[in-house]
Image (cartoon, rainbow, N blue to C red; front, side, top):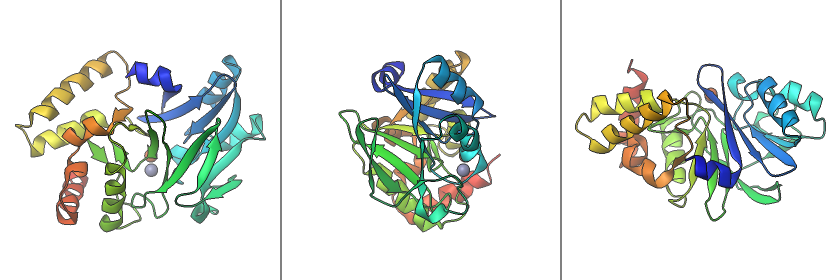
Length: 247
Ligand code: ZN
Ligand code: FE
């Protein structure tokens, strides 16, 4: 996993209880995704002498936009990119986007993918390189998916299918380190599932070494994510409701 990170120049900064701020960089500039806080990002960029080119906002929750105000004080030319549907709830946005828009970031083409469900306007950012990568916010987690707060189960299921249909070698960067508890839930439902057991082992090892369990490969995730494996809306809805009541 670290190999992938290095190759793609994407690093994760763990903040708050379980948030991960992703920093995508080249030699001179960086793009930050969902900065819950500003301080660790400012520190990293200054130490590494990087200009902040853009802030990507997947949705309006405070643990995703909380650091933006202070970041644009330091880098007033940074683009703040967010859904055009969230002009009220995501302040400071100066580049409003919609589904399928194409952006140029760090000299790469990035596509906006709308994935509604967690909120009524959640978006993701997809870069189709040799190893494609996706910043998915709170829509999909390793072994889990986001809670359906504002959208409908049908919308969320459609969003999950849209992710499922991306190239199988896509590396997915989500915004929370929830992998272990998601796996424990999945194992409650499928106690004999060997893929889940194996993944839990790997995850516990990484966590004990203080490593992140994300990003994850779509291909591998297809084996262990019950939401990605759901055959239809009914099954998806059952799983989501079951997870909501699981403690
Ligand atoms: Zn959220
Ligand atoms: Fe969140």
